[in-house]
Image (cartoon, rainbow, N blue to C red; front, side, top):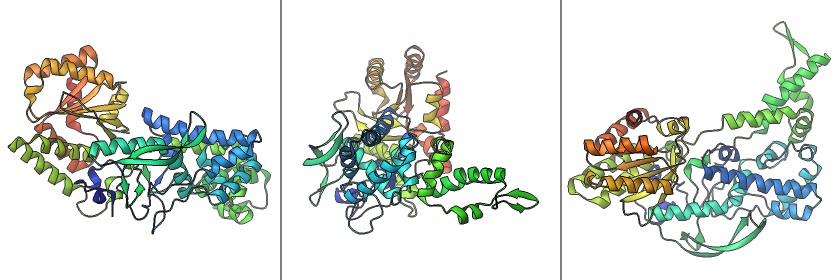
Length: 469
């Protein structure tokens, strides 16, 4: 049974911001540190810092001879089964760093010249040099280090989707301020007596980016080849009239064990630096909708239903149905550019929520090009444009200031009049606040483009942006 089914949510995976995990087993997705490092929001930067600081603490403890603390830090990365991600096909069972694995890693890092010289300084670097460390253990360890921000995400998501939560005591998590593991009580969704922690689907990957075999072939083998060509060693052969040392010969001669790879990292220190730089520049993008549900009509089916409900809401003047339909539509079509919806409580301006902007191309990415603050995007939903008075817009600008954004999607049924349009343009020029009216005509245009292309360009919204300039 999936989370959405267990909690009677009338949503499909395409309009859920989180990974709709099965609650009786694990789903084969992973959280990749390289993809976290590529996040450009302040929230993403906070996640990266938590992971880097934790592993830096491990390495500093080893360097200072405090092996007890290093061992505690490593052995504490035992996944709690609350995330339901990984390889298990039966009952959920995290595969992070247990005591025995932690001891092996500690011993490896303690004796590692690459670690001693500072060449290994990120958690995922261990996947290149230590046997038994791969996608599952790296991902589970990351989830454990980031448990607090993922708990906070789960709480905000449950508020947004109206999912019940209960107090759960004794949750063990890392406290970066004290540098210790502790236990706290949190409100979380519970199923069969076990707490559940949700993960944004924008962060899911099918494997971590680090691959010791790819690193070896692309960065180490060329160095070995150049060395043997220069020395004129017995490995040099003639291929198509040109001297070379084939990858096959190098692997036959030296193998491709992680132990050997570590020796080469020390010998060729630029190799790992170049590898990390390349991964950061070309980190794997967020997975498409179909990776989470590849059944026929998994996206278009729910989206078509949401559009019909939106039309019905307008016809019957049903504000609640209008809001719910738009929420589902926006969460579907704006993924993966926008994610992490947070409800703004007690807002007198309509139904409001924010979303983080992690766009890599298209309309929402354009704001970064023009240096317009849009780490968050405000979404405000009102049914009638008659509510959009001058004072309403001024209050909306104040709300945008509070959440530190210059971009708002203001949804209403009808087209706005010329006075409203002029006021919105004036706010863009005088205060640098860009309020995009998303009425029925715009919704239809954006949906039409999404159905045809399925990308995040949104030409109609880009045209609206041009009107401000």
